Each structure stands twice: as C-alpha cells, then as structure tokens.
Amino acid sequence: MKWLLALALWCWAAAACAAQRTDFQARCEDTIGETLSVLTGTQNGFRIDNSIGYRSLTAMKGGARAGQVVLGLTRTESRVSINVGGRLLSDPASGYECIAPHIEVGLVYPPIVVYVSREFAPGSCAYDEVLAHEKRHLAAYLDYLPKAEARVRLALERRFADKPLYARIGHAQGLLQREIDRSWMPYIKSEMAKVEALQAAIDSPQEYARLGKVCGGEVQSLIRPVRKPKKS
Image (cartoon, rainbow, N blue to C red; front, side):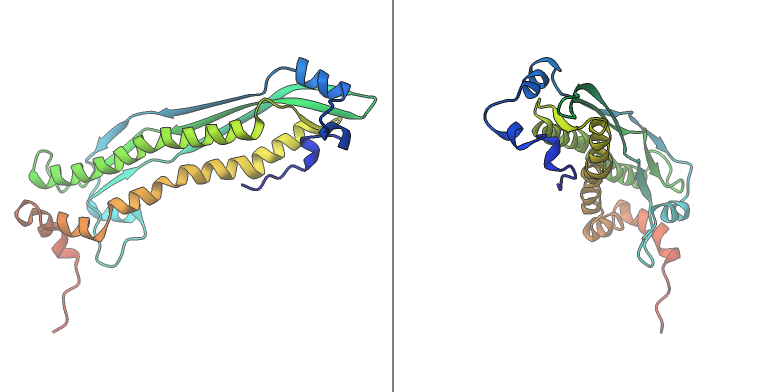
C-alpha cells in the first residue's frame, strides 16, 4: 500500500527522528495515550428465496455467456465504515501537534440472499442440487469475512503501532482523515472484493456441466429451451 502521508506524520523535525526524544515528543508519547484501532466484522445471516425465475436470475447476475442460464444465485454486498478521531496535543512553541489516532473500522455483510429458481420445486432432486451449489457460495462469503478482518487488523496495527502522528498545528486530523480516505478505504474495499475470485472459481465450466447432467436430466430439461437451435 502506498502511504499518502509525508514523513511529517512520523516526525515533525529532524531532531524528532533522532534517538534523543525532544520534550514535545516525550510529552506526546508518554501522556497523550495509546493509539487504538478497533475492527469488527459483522455477518447478518442469510435467507433462501424461491420466488424468482431463472430468466430474472440470469439478468440479475449479469455477464452471463450466450446461452448460459443462471438457476441459482447468492447475493450480498460488503459494506465498509471507518470512523476516525483521536486525542490531540499541541506545542505552540514549535508550531506542531501530535495525535493519537482512534480508528474504528466496520466490515459488514447485510443478510445474504440465496436464490433458487422458482421453476424447481423445493425438495426435488434438481432443487437440492442447485441449493447445494449455492451453499458453497454462501460458505465462501461466511468463511472469507474473518480472514479479511484479520488481514486488515494486522495492517492497521503495523501502520499505527501505538505511536502518535505529528503535523503542523491544525493539520493532524485532516492529514489522518486524508490517509484514511485515500489509502485505507480503497485498501479495505479491495480486500473485501477478493472474495469474488473465490466465487468465480465455484462457478467453473466443469461445475456448470455437472449441474446440467444431474437428476436424470431434470436440470437439462430447463436449460434446453433457451439454447439456440443448431443450423442445419
């Protein structure tokens, strides 16, 4: 990750970077309090929806290849929230201030919806096969969130590491917020989006071919009418 803050966030002058702490450094590090990064990952369960037909599911998924039919779909949208604050200490003599960042990050999955095409009766062989496939997607989402949470937490701890940040008086909070907006928010969103590669792997051509042959052709009987006839 490219950090957007200048070295001024780590030290306000060359003397501040030296082994000997300045009086202001000592006051900041010893009295301002610890930096704090709080990260929570929240899952809100899932529900199964059998009310939508395969044509609508195909349109909902988008990006389907010609002739491809979507018989089931698992949908959610990850949400990231970041609240930033912190205690400030200023040094009018030098014109600098320090801040002990307090950062709260929330990673949330709204209720996940698992769709199975309404053309399949619950309890039928085809329904159970499609549902089992979609539950693999569901498991991928549920398993991924704590892993993303752990990676983001480690990155936050490495970055802030209980050290105050320094800047000119009146600028510390703005610089910290800028780093959050321009660096941390895109980084966290990119981490959350990596789950889609896992989802794509589940929908392999081999898996689609397998689903087309299960249950004595029950699934195939639904797919066949939407395929274009071969030219004679």
